[in-house]
Length: 198
Image (tube, rainbow, N blue to C red):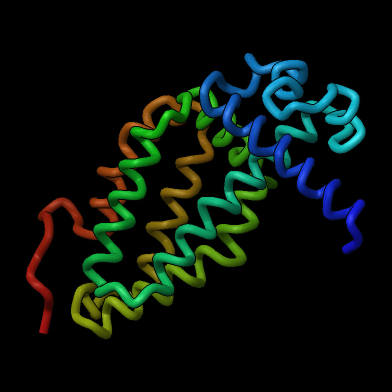
C-alpha cells in the first residue's frame, strides 16, 4: 500500500469512527452527513467520495462496529483465562454494552439491519461466531463446566431459536437492557450457577 492509499484508508477509518460515535449517541437517523464531516474534520464531499451515500456509510459503520466487537470476543475466547473467568467476562461484556453510551436507537437500527437476514452480523455469526461458540461449549464440557449430556444439536437449536427471535422487530426495544441476563441464562440456566461437574 503506497502513501496515498494509506492516507485514504486512515481518512476512511476516521470517518467511520466519527460516524459510529455520533450514531451511538444519537441514533442513525438523527445524525447528518454534515455532522459526521465536522466530527471527522473532513468535507461532506469527501464522505460522499468515499462512501457514495449515507445508507452505504451506515452499512459500513455497522460492519466496522461488528468487527470491533467480534475482535474483542475472539481475543477473549483465545485467551489463557480460566474457563469460568471467560464466562464472567462474556456476561460483563454484555453488561457493558447495555450500560455503554450506546443510544438504544442505534441498537434498534443495528437489529433492524440484522432482521433483514442479509446483514453482516448474520454473516459473521454463521461463518465465525457459531463454530467458535461450539468449540467453546465443547471445551466447557471437557473441563466439566458444561453438562456433557447436553447435545450440541440441542444447543444449536436453542441458539437458532434465540437468533430468529432477535430478528423480530417488536423485540428490539427490550433486548439491550436484558442482554446481560440473557447471557447468564444461556450459561447458567434458570437454576443458577452450579459447581463444576467432575
